[in-house]
Amino acid sequence: MIQTITAEKIPIKLWLSDVEEGAMRQIRNIANFPFAFHHIAIMPDAHEGYGMPIGGVMATREVIVPNAVGVDIGCGVCAQKSSLTGIDRQIIKAIMSDIRTMIPLGFNKHKERQNEHLLPKLEIKGACIEKEWDNALRSLGSLGGGNHFIEIQKGSDGHIWIMLHSGSRNLGKKTADHYNRIAMNYARAKGLGDLIRQELSYLELESEAGEKYFAEMNFCVQYALANRRLMMERIKEAFVNNISNIKWEDFINIAHNYASQELHFGHNVIVHRKGATEARAGQTGIIPGSQGTKSYIVEGLGNPESFCSCSHGAGRKLGRKQAIRALDLEGEIEKLDKKGIIHSIRTRDDLDEASGAYKDIDEVIRNQEDLVQIKLALSPLAVIKG
Image (tube, rainbow, N blue to C red):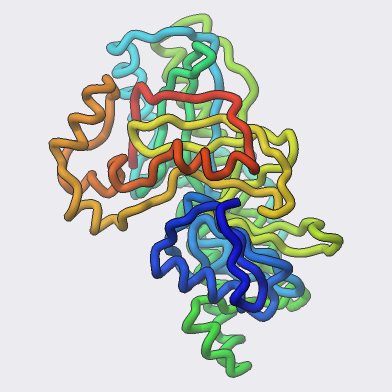
């Protein structure tokens, strides 16, 4: 831990020293949130979000806060190790070409519905998810845009790895927006205008809306996992199309936008992790870097001060529009080309996902040495972005 702030209703524990003004304002808001429990934990990749900063961990009693989960419910990262110890650059390009034919990118989705049996059974009566069901089945196995990615990597163990970052697509956003509107209406009726302005409207856990949100949120978490699993299978198909006799080790998965019921400091609470991942003692996790930098497979240390959490990545230091304005296109391309990485930076509009828009991943890792220990470093060979 880097510092503790005790000037608010409950303490704020930070694993970084430099916090942008907008994120710090949000951190103080959640530290004064009436249902916040014990303390607030802020991970080293933190930056401004909606209501609660990305990289924030907040435990609550009695209520759940949609904006403290976020709009891409269940978004996360998965990785898998291959038996390969080397791979030709031209083979990588062929694999990437196959991936692009099998996995829709950006706003694209499949023309046909995907296998409904890949998802858990929907048993929530009157769920808002039902209205998105057809779209959800066509979006299953698609990457999305923004900071979502597919990478082919070389591990410090000498093996080739694949990693991907994606979430619940539009299903999670529709769910988040629907229940945040209900929470705002509830806050308005209760005269809680400050919480509306702070984007921290909440639902009581034992209310009908609170129970339905918690159930639909968990369904979206499972949908996001199914989405990543299907994409991972198709990435492996692309490898098999170009290389024979590949074996794969266990699938590693970690989510970073969700809330869960947990026991901390002797109390049953709802832990909101928004851009933060669980890091219990011995738990395997993934902390990806930015495009062109290393990612890490880590092991959690179970630090109670972070509610057994760690960062979900490097974290932005420049907003998307700011990065497009401020970064040097040729310089960002040169950095990647020098490393021999097959990348996706082509035009100025791509600079919102350049490595210069993100914090230094190695500094982020150093700042959480009491939360995780490194098991493996993964260096990018090729990147596909949405």
